[in-house]
Amino acid sequence: MEEVRIEKLVHGGQGIGTLRDGRKVFVWNSLPGELVQVRLTKQRRDYAEGIAEVVTEPSKQRIEPKDEAFLSTSPWQIMDFEIENELKKDILTESFEREKVQLPTVLFDAGENQWHYRNKMEYSFWGDDDGLHLALFHRGSHGKRIVTGSSLARPEIDKIANIICSKLNTKGIRASQLKTVVVRCNQAGEVVAALYVKDEQFPKIAELDGITKGIVVYYSTPKSPASIITNKLSHYGDITLTDSIAGKAITYDVNSFFQVNVPVFLAALTEISRAVKGEPTIVDLYSGVGTIGLAVGAKTLVELDPQNITRAQENTKGTEVEVIQASSETAEQLITGDACIIVDPPRAGLHRSLVQNLLLARPQKIIYLSCNPATQARDISLLQESYTLTELRGYNFFPRTPHIESLAVLELEHV
Image (tube, rainbow, N blue to C red):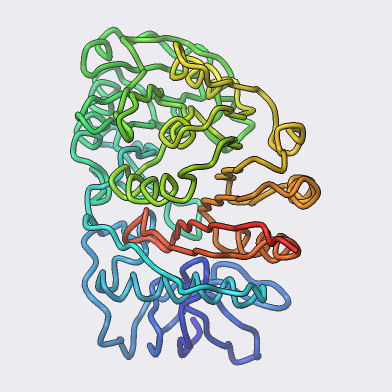
């Protein structure tokens, strides 16, 4: 192990320090100012990554984590919640300053609930002499750790995850046959689940029927480490859920893109609604099942994923809202000078051609919600050619983790 003094926390969530050979090292389970003993998990020519196994000189800000497996799901359990929010605001600001974006006053919404907020969790499995267990992967390795749940998950989720594991146990199902189980619930506490298995001949298990609102079993090819759908093997009950979002009933299912922390998302939605008020034409790109667009009065939803499209069509039934299946970068005909464009892209940010389309069409306003301030700042630095960043607000959508959500409002500069 290497002894390292931690300088600060960086975007991504690790502490950063310097190894004896001069390389920078990114360290989990560390706080600024701490002297730690680091087990290196990845080494590259210019940098390394690792986990602090021993904290020789702990920070005064360090607290005892709530979960034993905190590094697997929520590595920022080691600090006070107030400190977490201060650090997230600082990291958000630094991300934009690094890209030389002209900043307004940066605001930050911490939310109120730091535990049991997640309405979706994904667990793996572990088998031993005692049978089958829920498990999570150790951060920085391919190893697993047995768990019974997470302090981030809503209690309904962990209850059903454990029941599913128990039912599989009674049927002698082995961990080698399984990938993961995804469990999600709505605000009313209804729960649905998707079980991903590596065994194409996985048996039908009647005992799964009726334990919750709905469960689907998917075969997922072992060639992929991810839980992707290859074939549907069996289905019990109804895997759709409905939540009221800003007065709109939004239906989604266990596979849909939907916000994990609804109360904090509603706070962001309030700001989006205010920012688009009075705009005659609102287009929602990366619209998912239509959650944002329908809540703020968009007349056009653009989405590529077929499953999200199906749910979006259900959610817009009986309205005049148009649902278009297309990638956002190929929907240039919808980006017009009189439009207000809403974007909520994946972590990779906006496709470069979409940035160019926005600069060419010059819509009056762009509302940019992001789960990755680094790529958001990169995109906005390019859009500064024609736009002014008038508002920037961070949100703690994922308390006790390093993840930051941020909302930017850009207004066209009129020459």
